[in-house]
Amino acid sequence: MTSGNSDNPIQSVYADDPDMADLVRLFVSELPDRIASFERAWRERRVEDLARLAHQLKGAGSGYGYPGITQAAAELERELRELSAPQGVADVRDELDTLLDVCRRAMKACG
Amino acid sequence: MQIHASQLNSRPRVLVIDDSPDVHRLLSARLRSEDLDLIPAESGRAGLDIAEKDPPSVVLLDLDMPEMDGFEVLRRLKDSPTLNNIPVIVLSGLQSPHDKVTAFDLGALDYICKPFDLTELRVRIRAAVRLSNLLLMLSQRAQIDGLTGLYNRAHFDHRWREEVARARRKRRPLALAGIDCDHFKSINDNYGHPAGDAVLQGLAAIFQRACRETDLPCRYGGEEFFLIMPDTTPEQAMSVCERVRTMVQDVVWPRHPDHGLTVSIGLVGCSEVGAVDPQKWVEDTDKNLYAAKQQGRNCVVMTELPSGGVRLAEAG
Image (tube, rainbow over all chains, first blue to last red; front, top):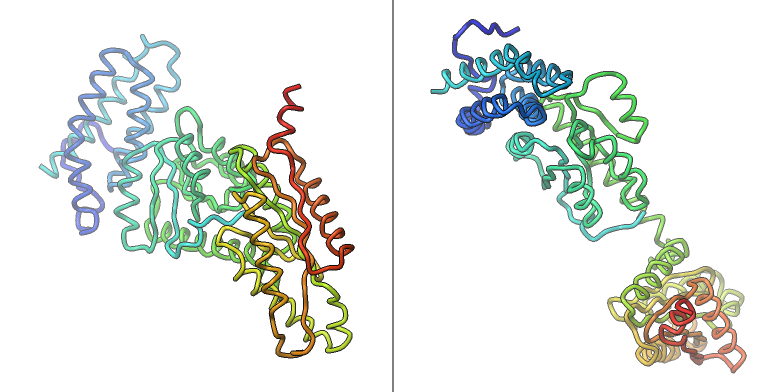
């Protein structure tokens, strides 16, 4: 399990795979936009959009060599699916932070 | 199962149905070295539309998608008579045995869990492409007459209904000819069955030469053939049939140079197809063929169906 408190950079599993290097860089370069989208959706309590964003990141993370992102995104998606009202988004802040933290650590390794 | 032109291309087409742009990006990078064309679809609906227009060799299908999910896409693919034989590999993050069982029950060929191992994905796609090629070969063989290389009766039955429906939809002309070799039995009786077979092959070669590219000669059985002529007016069809008739009559057969052959032809054409029964059309063609035999053989007897006439009857 990825620890939410650590801020060690995370390298992609495919960091040394020449076929993947460009794609991984592209994925990481788009992470700040994704993070911003998460934050905006969370502020505006758009539960459906949050779930969709989490679902997409869950599918993408491992593909680019970041199983930690997939894991955190899956956790967040599961929690979101269980929410009954938009007001409940506050309850998923921990899961969201864990996910965004893993993303930032991936950015650090590439930066 | 129908054969589509695109399926005959040597490069297999793999349709990827997944709502995540990342998956498309990753797959196209990961499968770049494979001899494949990847066609991306970002929703179930879009994927079905592409498959219907241009059936792929293999489908890679995500399950967890908004709106139409992968199970529904799979169900629709398997319900479609033209698409149900396409191998489908499910590529999904859903890992429960229940999801797998459901996917296989619905007709999936294979199930790969995300995140996928690249090497495994490659070999599984290759296996699916092999299966798709075998199915295609089988379906082609099942539609072709072994002796003459023409389409067989099974293909004719299916294709004729399709052509009638198409002509009706587009209000186009259409013609059907029944062609029978006169006194064919005397060839078998006098020169043996191999000579009879050679005649059937020779007739098939003549039909193919006398016909235009769009015409479809089929061997219906024995020495009887059908010739479907799409987009052909009764007058044009008559001239195709006359060309066939005179070409056959002029042939000198290597095995029996002194014994020429002729064909009798029954033809039914229509300038603008309305609501007609394809089976009735075939029966009328047979009647005209019989009439041609009665009139002394080596001739064409034609009748015309009224243009779109039955549409009026429908309206009334």
